[in-house]
Length: 135
Image (cartoon, rainbow, N blue to C red; front, side):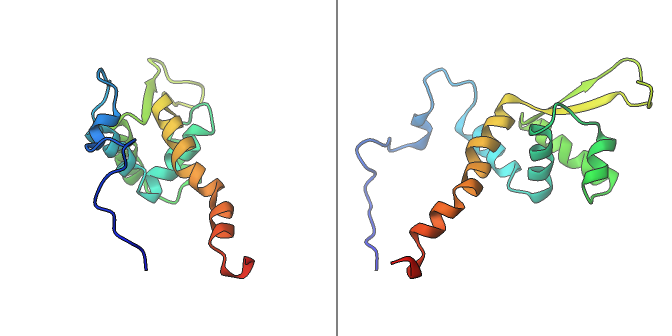
């Protein structure tokens, strides 16, 4: 049975918001909203696909995701609201009639790469560390 620690270690601030630099661009709440946004499977998959391509149209995203058009746009809107995805609109439609393109922002790429993707990559390490048969 583990012991319960009530005191934060000396190298960690008492208030997690103090981890941010004095002139932080975003607040702790905004960073947490980003994290919460990709806690949804559909939004995670949208961000994952956008992060691993240059940019995609809603039609291209729709072809690889199993969601209806309104659901896709709802989730794209949520990702845009928290700053993980950006939309580029052409003034003229291209040869296929498409003019809206989405891509992951730098924050989206970083959160994905150093967040969920890192945890997924390290799962093998975690399972080996906690495998009772390995001893």
